Image (cartoon, rainbow, N blue to C red; front, top):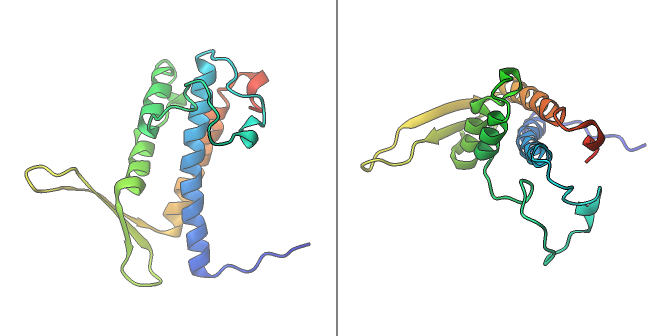
Length: 165
């Protein structure tokens, strides 16, 4: 049996950051699948068919293939759950994803925590600082747990016969 190497502090930090980004991506895909099924759309592809996709293949347009952003997916999902606030995705998830996509990350020292800065769009040649977040291990772990819980909640909305899709 292969043993895993012990992770140093920097490696563990990078792994946590990667897990956070992977959870954001997983949530986006889960929303696409659930929205697709909530629209009573036919199955896009048979199970495991994604493995055989190749360049040039054509598919029907759907939630799964759309260019909608995570924010648009969250809005569509939440709109379908207006009567169940506990089933809605908090808007802060979109803000978190946007901060990673459009923000600036830097570490002030080689072994220090990364700090994420998010700025507004320019207006009259000026921007406003919208967010400054120190990405500590604790903060990363908290975000990973919250996102994982949201993925489980969203996938729980799939009809019973489609949960393995």
